Length: 414
Length: 106
Image (cartoon, rainbow over all chains, first blue to last red; front, side, top):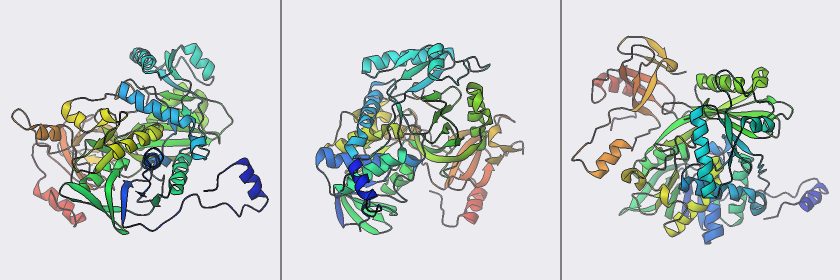
């Protein structure tokens, strides 16, 4: 792999940019791999990357039905934060956030991590108490957050209207090292690094069946033929239930549509991420100047990658009360992604009833921020059979009643 | 926007008038059942990409619960029917088979 650098740009500029090599290869599938990861989104590619980097397992294929990063990795609002309430959540999300800090250097790929800070607005007295509790919990967990006053919110976000009629801003939970990153670049950077380690990324290859013998996985049937494997990692987000059905088990997950939208680009007006969970809306300004807005999920099962218009209206109506200046903005695009939601709003990183099959799903409405931590922990789980980062997120927690309840604490837009 | 017909009051209602109630026809397991059965009843869901039987409530209307058969991949609604039934009636199955010949009930 030729490294990207200022020198490389100068070198290529001198020869009309004809020497740039493909970022990742497009190989033919081999007959057998040590590990197959299904799903070349951020979580799947990060898993493959850390299998190679931390455990030296490079006979790996990442199989993708569409194109890499074309699912929720390319559809989210790119927010990165780790201000969760429960200890296991704080551990894996803070691991992820800290890995984002050095990801561009680690991957030699500019993922444009921008630790601009994230505010979660408290707009009811209940939320004030909730976020104060989260700030105390974060202090114990070693996650740097702080509950701030409305005046401090106004200093950080001059365009905010503090005294709205329905949703006055009563304070906020502030994480100054939260922020955003370029979502596509995260997938592309991991893919390039995986390809460089000799892993095969098989795009446009759909898994049509999962085969096992005597309760142990043997491989997957795909649209490009049978591919054998010793271990199989399922990392397919909204379609995890469909894939689990092919393997012969069920998951405690339901798939629903989550929407986002962006406005026309405007001059810089807000240099932090603002989340308003009471009104189910969150907003940041992209480097291009667009206001990036995330909304709520639909209440019913849905695989169509589009959501209901009335949810957009709810989100935008509430945001306009909090940010009056956006009321005249035109919206450019709206889209949906299919998110896999669990009962306790925490992910599943687990062994399954079939030996050799591991599942990483249930990230619901907030998976992007977790990509590197999820990959780090899931790779350890696949390689060694257990991981301190993922132990609490096993499937057995549902049977045993050990929920990691983030539906109130971290919940956005549920 | 999803539109369903309430089988009780006959009103054709937008999803804003309705409340979704999740997967239908779950078999309830209670005292005396195994841990696996109870876990399955509480948590495991079919979550299909395709034909889905589900519960809805006409929340901002007559208030009644009812059932719907719907495609989660296209949002097509095949039928709505009474809540007072433990499995989809034959005419609902027939209505689905007419549009999805490859589909078969479990």
